[in-house]
Image (cartoon, rainbow, N blue to C red; front, side, top):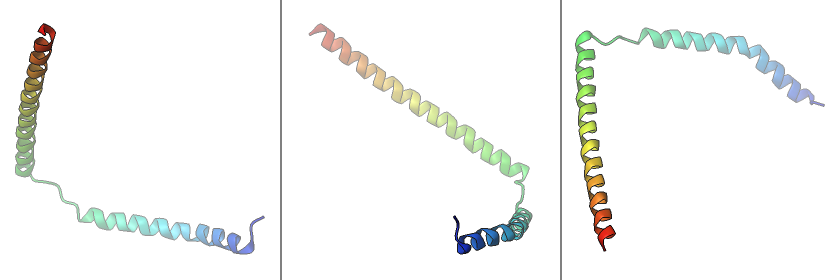
Length: 82
């Protein structure tokens, strides 16, 4: 059985629930008023940066993969002859 103190804590928690929800939504509204959308120029600039970065990473990983595969191929060829 729950003690009186535990029951009071549960009841108190349940009673404060609506006020906590109201406070949460108030905070969300307040923060959403601070949100701004990026301009078209900002979106174009960040998109360009992302496309260039993806291309450079792709090139880097292609070259890394090619170098590793060639060195493994040469090692396997070398050890298969000896």
